[in-house]
Length: 128
View (cartoon, rainbow, N blue to C red):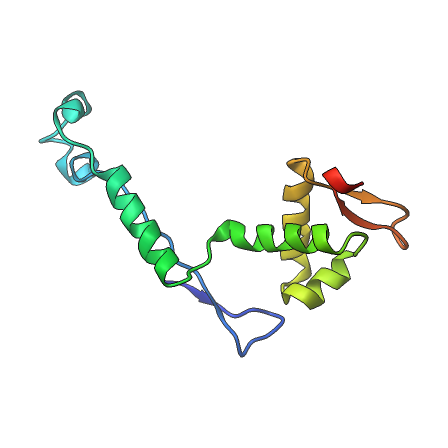
C-alpha cells in the first residue's frame, strides 16, 4: 500500500487503498483451464463480494475517492461565492487537488464560477 503525506498537514498522512475485484475463474493464471467461452458455466461472485467489501469499508468509515469531491460540493452549496483559497483552508487539501475537484464538478454541471476572477466565486448550479 502506498502512503503519501498531505502537503498541507504532514502530521495527518493520507493513505490510499485500491482493490481489484474479479471472479476467481477470470484470473490470467487460469486462462489455459477456463477460457472466456466457459465463463458462463460458473457462478459469478463479484457482485456479492464487492458488496461485502463496501460494507466492511463503510463500517470502518473509510472514505472513497469521491468523498472529497462530495465534501467540496457540499461546502459550495452551503457557502456560495467562495474561492479556491477558501476551500484550501476549509478542506485542508492542496490547491491542485481542489482545482481538479472543481473541474470535475464543473464538467458534471454541478457548479459554476460567477463574477470576475478576483471578486467572483463558485456557486452550486441549482442555486445561481
